[in-house]
Image 1 (cartoon, helix red, strand yellow):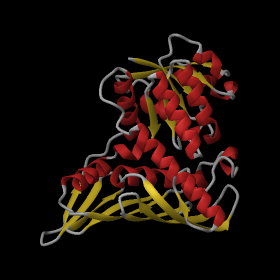
Image 2 (tube, one colour):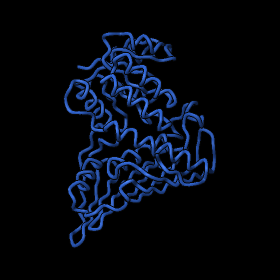
Image 3 (cartoon, one colour):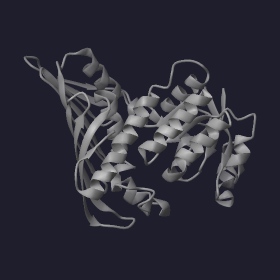
Image 4 (cartoon, helix red, strand yellow):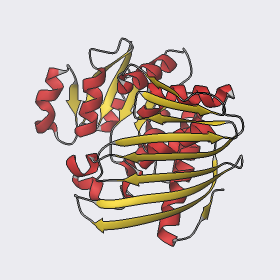
Length: 323
């Protein structure tokens, strides 16, 4: 069993604990760090988590195997580096960082310390996405030429925290909350991105946003792509890969549709699962020396490289090449 500390007990930090504590057979939370000790005291007691306000105390605790970061985005890179230097494995909520250089610095610190690094891209574990990757890898679509993705999710309106309204913490509007998941899906299916051309449209600011993101992609392997995200719209997820012999799409968590030349349309529905617990079980298995974490360090940095380029493209109104 991996003994972990949860850093940050806001809305999402509590979601993580609720998904894992007493349910995972591989990882348990024994310590927590929060700046709101009074507000989280009952939650910590309910889950058997000892709380403190100092990150350094956890890093110095020899009983802690791993830290889980559910903190504001701008803190991630430095916290990952500090944890790796302390010999702690790290699971970081998305986005891993806000800048390509910081993602590379964080990942390299973990590699140098021989610490496992995991990232909270839980949609990677959805049954629909696992099936889509299998279809693409199986070759039935022929040469895959294009990919499209859309993720709308009204959580940013319904579950608001003050720091999420700061451009320095959440650049690119819906990119940190929704678009980053599509980027991870794209990287897993098409590899690193070479060029992006992004546009942002806003109808209303503040903590009840009305805005959209649209991005065109060119991948290093020559594929093209399109991403869309609408923050206030109800939940919708689609990732669709197009080849010269067919196409396959993942719809939401549990559905796929495959269309191949000369064959009937194939629609499948899969059993739902807890993707949050699945990603932590995969992380703990990697910490224990089992299978590597399924999102590789190279994929993590490629995702943030694309994210960083999108933010730059939005700011300039021009396409951005990725080094």
